[in-house]
Length: 281
Image 1 (cartoon, rainbow, N blue to C red):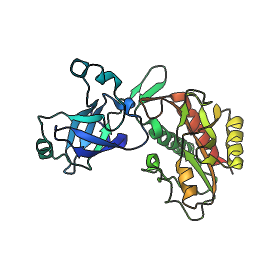
Image 2 (image 1 turned 120 degrees about the horizontal axis):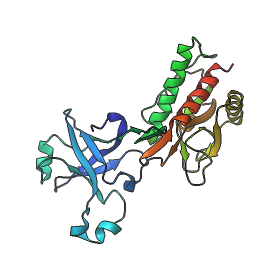
Image 3 (image 1 turned 180 degrees about the horizontal axis):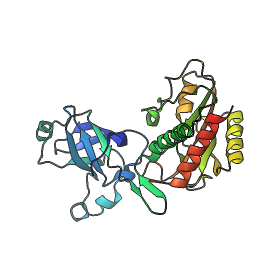
């Protein structure tokens, strides 16, 4: 399987003397979540070089208990390049260099029970819901009740994606992201999540009430939730000085920033709520 650029997970931080690569991570994933993952490194010259993320001490036959007990951090992982290379010079001769982007294999699977597994459903799933809502309105010959701008950020995972790029006279911002399901969270993989609060504080109470009202009126399954370790593009816009009403919704995703999973019911519910919001006057 060939990786896609939309599953970027890191940047080459060092071409090691062993011929392997050190990774500087992009986004908030945990190192244990990518152990053994296939990757593609995109070089400055346009080549796509395959490899695997492995521990520096991967083999129990060689390192014994050290292979089981090492600390999961950036000092103990590397990319093993699928090429005959045993030195930094050999590796650079392939076109690989510090600053090259590294993409994880997405490994997308859609089951006959409606589950969808993939890397980076956060926030590919949200983009799919926006697209589905707009396509459904167009197919039905409907238009949003208000002038609408759709803004898809490339930098949401690093915290500044929603800081700019919006119309100066914007009044409301509906942010679409993923609702992390699991543990003690109220969210699940079968409904649309509606945020009350995350690490940056509460979302606008009137927007939250509107979204709950629209979901209830349309019979859309939804879950209200609070996330203590979470931020969004709407939050980035507020921090950049934006003075508008902000709300946040999105499909439920299990194992966020790991090998994630959602269900088609959650995507449908989220797309329906986006459409209801666009039609509300």
